[in-house]
Image 1 (spheres, one colour):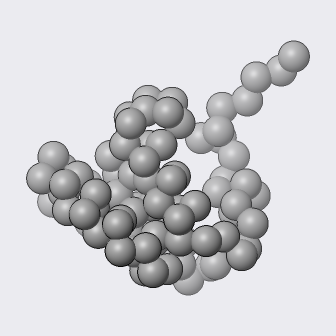
Image 2 (cartoon, rainbow, N blue to C red):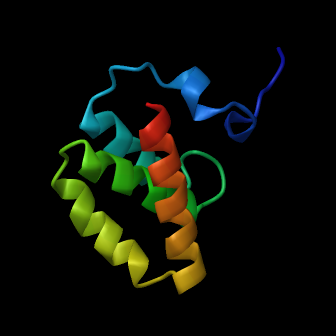
Image 3 (cartoon, rainbow, N blue to C red):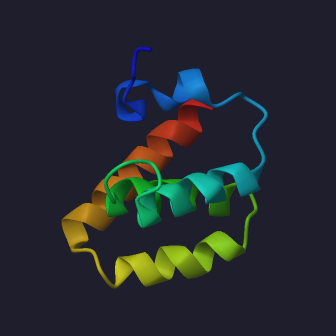
Length: 89
């Protein structure tokens, strides 16, 4: 059976248009914990930003905790990615 890396698939192809804020929050948890492969704090922060923008208040807590472990460039990158995602979806 072929194995596919999820990072190789754009989120727009995996995530349906009408996804709940909780689903984005779960994506953040997956990237923060390494359940989606290697731990990726920028991706986790990005998904927590999207979840918060979509109304998930719990995402704000995790977003804040991650920011303590990230540098300014990483946080800025996560914000850019979240904004880009939100403008497309």
